[in-house]
Image (cartoon, rainbow, N blue to C red):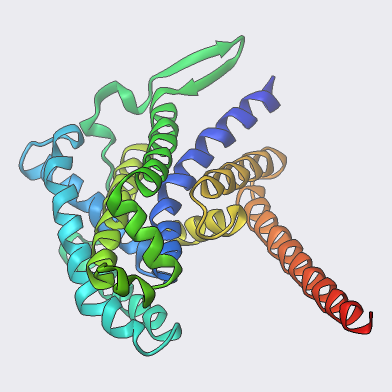
Length: 301
């Protein structure tokens, strides 16, 4: 039964990874940008929730009314002041710009809050440790289940938003061809601003989830960025449902690896990422060779 429990725990952990990878995958699919400040923004949101709970007495169930709009406005500023300007210079400049931004955010958080770890668990009562018993000896945490459901709901909601709403269709069109959509009366700059604001709200949801399920500190953003990146790549960068699949794969690999060895938690996750990356690269090369072969055969005939 212990392996069954590990699989369940891995699935629930994968839900969190899909949640934190959602904004990263969404921004890449819309603007083709890799935001290296993604994890730092999650920490910023987590500290925002903590500060509201600690100093204003607003638990996370209420604090989101202030954190979500603030993060959305921060996304507007991020797009206007950093991403839009740096994207004009090619793919590498936005990566470097967001990397520098992450360093600034981490150090500002350290200056303001110090190196002590924080947690939102004291502000959510028994939800932080309560669990359900699925079978004899198999338990799942209520909070982990809620986070998993939030990930599925968020990814599903974003997918419906992109396919069923006018703004969502405009975002998809802009992602396909930024220049051509201008001929249809769509302002690509405004669309990217909206997309970044949405991505920042998803980041704040992930920050709240991290704060409730674990501890965090000003420099905890980098590991979260790595997990988000691995989940997005495993599932296929830019695919929302693929992000969920990638998160589940990563979570199960880490959970099973931790059962095999104490160091296996991280090793198994990174190894799975590398295997998928190598396999995907190999398949792409095989596909390229096949296209070349087909072209040559067509010319010869």
